Amino acid sequence: MTEVKLFFIGDNTPGLIKPKHFKEFALPYNKRIFDAFRDLKCIKIWHSDTDETRNLEMTPEIGSDVFHVGPSDLVDIQIVKKDWRQNLPSWKHKSPITRQRKPKSD
Image 1 (cartoon, one colour):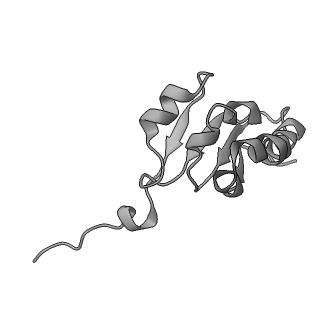
Image 2 (cartoon, one colour):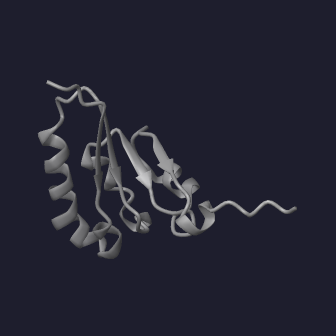
Image 3 (spheres, one colour):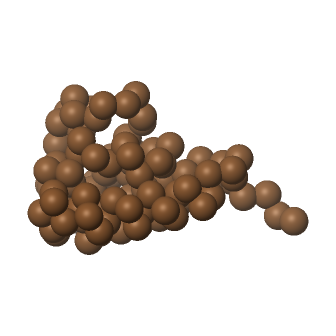
C-alpha cells in the first residue's frame, strides 16, 4: 500500500455562510471527514479560499493539522494567529493576482 504523506481538503463554502450555519452544516461535515482519516500518519490540511475570519474560533474543531488560509486580500494572517484557540499552524498563500511576477525590465 502506498504511504499517504499529505491529506488536503478544500472547502470554500464556509466563508460564504453565517457562523450559525457554519456551526450547523460546514463544521460537522468537515470534522467528519478529518475524523475518518484521523489515524493517517500524515499532515492533514484544511483549506478555504474565502474569508473565514468570522468562523475562526470554530475552525480548530475541524481537526486538521494545518489551516491553509485564503488569499491575502481576504484574510489578515495576524487575526488568524491571534484568534486561533489552539496552537495549530496556519499557512497563508497569495491570491493568483498578487502571486504573478513582475516582468523584468530590459
